[in-house]
Image (cartoon, rainbow, N blue to C red):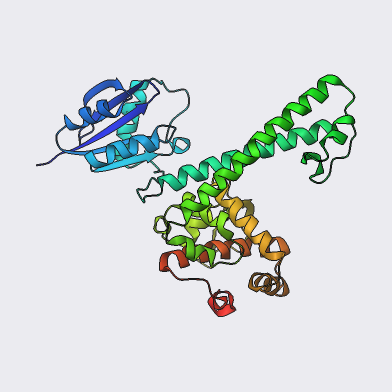
Length: 355
């Protein structure tokens, strides 16, 4: 009979601590190997039976996932924030590897999605673009902070323009402060062309994928948001329902209730207590949430089907902030449904009977 072996890996930059359990939970092998593809494959090939492997999500996760996938029956990359650890328990590399193997055997781990959809180039291009956008924004904020800290109003974008820089710098009387602003301007001049280059590379790569046509048909998404959506979501089939996507994108409401049932005249009756709404879920993908929120805000700025969808909800008595959330959810839902079907957007999708 082909036995199952559960393998836990505690991965570090130089070494990987490995623990192997059999299907009865008995530790049969412990080892420490080099963090290298050849060493990992050699170790795995030396194990008989059906192999299942787990390790935590981290900087090595994507690389190790692709190394292991052809050689084992299951690779589960687990969420380190949701491990069933207890406070004040002993901790070491060997203990961590054993615990991971045991939790894998018991089915206690929450997986992190890793796909093989041929999107590695697009994902790396998108990551480069988002990083450069973040770096550029940080430099811009630091520049404005220099002026605001000295009571100099700096609204708008002229403060960044090379044409107006001499006039702005003249307002900084302290030599050290002025020198710091000049360095930030030089940094900004270096980042802006790189950001544009990364953007063009990302857009060019996104055109190679059929999903781009579907996503571009949805009003207010645009080519940049469509490219980022493809890179972040990778495939719509990882979400079985729209509510799973809402939760992943931070668009799900967190509710709390207690004492849900009462006994009335000897019968179990659901209590009429109102459910406490605590807001949107905090554990989510921040990039995806920004995409749908920004797209919803952009849709409201222009006349069209999205604005009509929002107006109908407000006219029905929905609060404006909830109507905006509903709009963002509708954007996410249509993205998921149309991507799965390979169909383009039609205004009929926003009519009440289709909503």
